[in-house]
Length: 144
Image (spheres, rainbow, N blue to C red):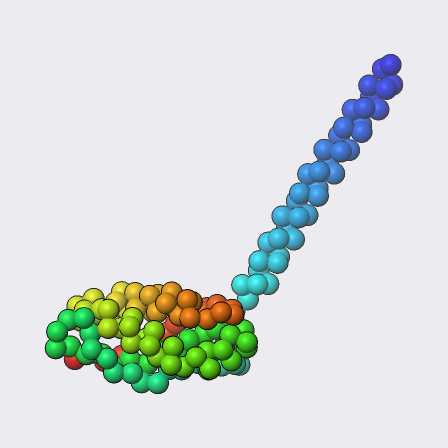
């Protein structure tokens, strides 16, 4: 019976080592996959997946003020870019509605621009059926 006890211990240690090794291999594999997914896009890839809006002038929420804006929108893939190019009226409407919702004071400074980019990205995400909006950048910005 003692030999069977030692054999059971050896098998138990082997099973535990296998489970730990398998878990470690899975964890390392997941980290490697995440690192590949987060690889920054090249300039060519960004150009292929981006669209620029027209320069748009719209009133702001504060009376007597208006903004002149243009955005660069990075999309998740070529299909989403093709959809965005077909939905220019909806993209333009989303830009106008988003910008018009801000008061002049809210758009002053870096925080205001960041907030504008984030809100426009969220609104555009509702427009597209395929893919996602990866980021929105303000490329032209004037307020009066």
